[in-house]
Length: 399
Image (tube, rainbow, N blue to C red; front, side, top):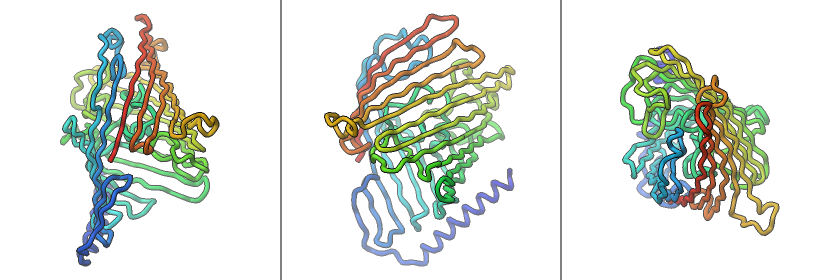
């Protein structure tokens, strides 16, 4: 492993040094360009070697009776907490330096004062790319899709339990295109495994992650919700991803490392977590499909117990104006079903989510309004079933 890490850093460092050296031999032009694109306001020099993109996003949300997905049965007995809030306020800075393939990206959450992403990408070759820093691990499509480009107001019931969220580390990735159905994407990463904002590891073991994706129709499905482009050619993917990590944590979120119910107060190296997921996605002529099927095993190295969690979601969307003339052209309908089992040895212990949403795209995902209705049903063998119906309205704008 040490030799692999050393080889990785030598390759990455050599490539970056080469790019700096090439840039240093050329004089920089005095005149640049300023314009606006889908990635925000862009500033570049005339040679194209330097580019900075600055964008921001605001997300306003109304929710009733509350906003967060229920986690335990107690969440159904809470008093109604109707609210209106600025759910996200993001500042994004990206671009490239010295060479068009030496890229960088920062993302900052203004509302919570969190530095979410900071990463450098070396993307000279489509089949071999490198990335280091902090970013959302490409474990699941649902989590990787930006919160501003989803089909429903937020991610599904199972996202909390299975996402790897943001981690710090290094990764190798790329696209292997052999023509036609022989089109594949891959990601392999070595990560600290202690979550966003962490500057240390709790032990000498790291998080290891891999994802292999087959673009079986020869085209990738973009990491965004819906088929807004009304694709004339179908695109589909099947992906398998897995990860393993030893840490005090059993879950990750934007806040960093945390604990699932029943696994609180983890000690260094207490939990060995192994998980994998099988994913599918498909876009064609205004119809979109996405699904994930998860298994996660948590081994408690102190209490000597093992728990297996399971979950899945199915999601679809469509632009009905393609069939019904009376339907607004910019309005999409989307629906999702999700199911989570906290312990597969207890069949009657399960949580379900049923959701339907309408999206009106003023300017694609950059300016849209979403109305969502969601039904939650929780069941436990020792407790009566609890349920809740929630409505949320969200306006999202990027500029």
